[in-house]
Structures are given as C-alpha cells and as structure tokens.
Image (cartoon, rainbow, N blue to C red; front, side, top):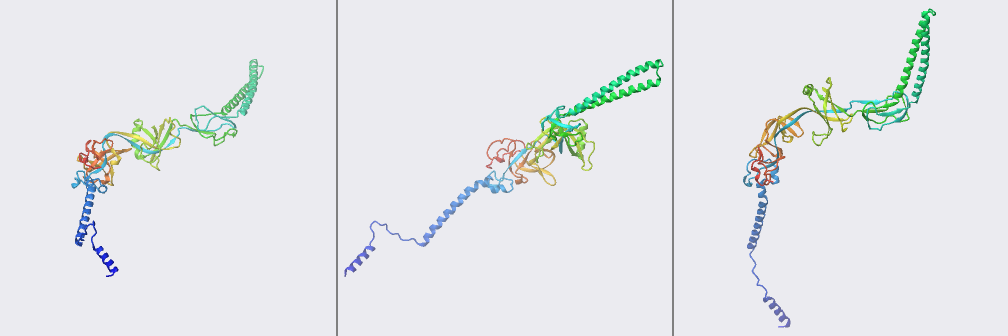
Length: 457
C-alpha cells in the first residue's frame, strides 16, 4: 500500500467518526407532523383577531354610540342584548311656557323731515360773509349769511330826504288852507279857491305817506341783507361762496336747512291691515312704532333698532294703484339716529297678548297641510302632535291649540325621529339633573324619564 492510499483511508475514517461534544442528530419529522403544527398556529391567530374585534365593537353596539347607528332612524325598545341604552337618540328640547307676545304690523318706511327750508336771497347784491359751518345744527334766528348793505343804506337815505321835502310842502299847504279858511268867513276869497287849497293839502299828505313807504322798503331791504335761520335744524352743504353776486331770482338758493328734532317716518300698510290700526287709533290709543335698520333676517339682537316713536296721523285715502295707505310716526330723535330720506323697517305695535303658550320657532315643523311638533312623553318616547300656531315674534311662536305649558318639544335632532322613537333630551335653558351621558331627562313634565341613564354619549 502506497503513501497516498494510506492518507486517503485516514481522511475517510476521520470524517465518519463522531465529533466529541456535538449534540446528537435527531431524526427528521415526517411531513404530515410539520403541516399539523402550522395549522394550529393559524387557528390561534384567527381566534386572537376575532377576540380583539369582539372586544372593540361589542360595548359600542350596546350603548348605541357607534357612528353607523347614529345615521339610521332611531327605533324604540331596548335594542336587544346591546345594553339598556340601545336605540336612544340624543336631542335638544325646549319646554313650552306661558308668556306675553306682541302683534306687529311690519312695513318699509322713509324718514321724512317735518320742515325743510331752502334759504334764498330776497335782494340782489354781493355775498359778503358766511357765518355757519356745513353740517352744523343751527337754532332758529341764528345768522347765516350777510349781503352787502351799502346800496340799500343809500336808498334809505334818499327816501328819507324825499320825505322831508314833501313834508315841508305839506306844511306850507296847511298854512295856506288855514288863511283861506279865515278869508272865506269874511267873503274875501271865493269858495272855489278854498276848495282847491284843501285838495292840495290832501295831495301833499299822500306824497308824504308814499315817502314813508319808500323808507320802510329800504329798511326792509337792509333786514333782508342779514339772513337768519327760520327754523332749528341741520345746515346742508354751502351752495354759494362768499364774494359771489346773488339775486332774488336765483333758483338754487344759498343753503338748505332740515329739521331733525323731532323727525317723522312715513310708511305704508296694506288696506287689509287698516281696520285693526284704525280701530285703536280712533279709540285714542298711543300706538308704538319702532324703526329698525334694513339688514336681512329676523328682528333680533343682530339687527339695530334706531328709535321708538308714536303714530301721529293716518292719510285720508288709500292708493288705488297699490292698495296701501300712508301713515306718519313722530320720533324725538334725541341722538340723531334717524336721518332724512333714510329707509328703515317699521314695526307698528297693534296688540299685546298676555299669558299665551310659547315655544321656540325651531320646534315647529311645517308641511303643506299642517304644522306639528315632536312631543316628548314621560316615558322618553316622542309622538307627533299637530298644533295651531298664532303670532310669531322674534324666536318665539304662539301655540293656540295642541300644547300646554310645561310640555317638552324637540328642537334639534328631529330628522332622526319617528313616531315612538326613544330619546334622551337635553332641555334648552335648564340644568341637567346630573349623571352621565345626558341623564337630565327627569326634570319637569314630559321629560325623558330614566331612559337616559345608559352609556349614551
């Protein structure tokens, strides 16, 4: 045996011998045992996932709080094994109450000044001075403008001089008349001469009186040169500046003054509203008239009330083309809130109702046939109740029939309700009685009872 054959035999013996310290080799599992172990593993995973899903969804379906349940119409009853609060719909409710409500006639009005004056010059001349500021409130008799007085002062002096001359002629004629009267008694002069002198005296008296008229006219022109305000009111923009020549024939005038205290509002009402207004007006009642701004929407705190006045007068005829009648209300306007030619919304108070049943407007549901509300019964279920409504004022509506004071009606959440739906109601303006999840249904008549004690959120 050669050397190479000896080394080959030694290496084969070494590779076939067991390694000291190595773990003994296990026989391989059969194929069917490996597949069985993997199947149990997947089964455990599926069971764990099912348990997690059940834990997550089971409490919510019982409390009626999952999002899917909120989109479907609520049903009555306990809702099966999901818990006591299943099928309960949370709503916002209000309690009907007795109160007072006003009946108004609403219209569109126009603020109208009781007096508007266009100041014009009554003489010709140069405008020397303007004594007011545009937009000022001027009092009656306050000076406004000055016109050059010198031409009229000269005319006055001329009239006075003419009068003195004519008075001297009159005095001389009177002396001659007295002389002729004495001679006539002595038959020294003919009677015709005396009569002629007497007529001359009368003629001179007429001339002197005419001279006095010329003097008065010149003095009046001097007064017209000093223009004062004829009323108390607000001055408008200046139409003519100082230095211009003004004429009595000018059409534009110098300035316009408008009375603003007091001020009136002229408005129209339809002829079918006239009987109730006319009855109270003829009875001597003071009918209140409110002036509001013209913002869109209902009469609420979002709108501004300018002033409160009183009905002053009613026009004497109805406009046949529109079927309306004009009325005028007077306002003190102490704060200058009303401005001439301003458009306002007008509310004429014609009646005050006391002790009527009132509910919020949001609780009234309207169809083409009738009006109804969702009434919350003592067992926390709702029922459809037809009502007859009356006057609506602000956010309140009068209920003539169908409800009593203390009844609870649904305001918000009606789109999820049907006849007999179970609800948990939060009453507007009332403090919940306590507890969790809307446990405020006990309070008052027609409340939600104990149905809201579940876990409804």
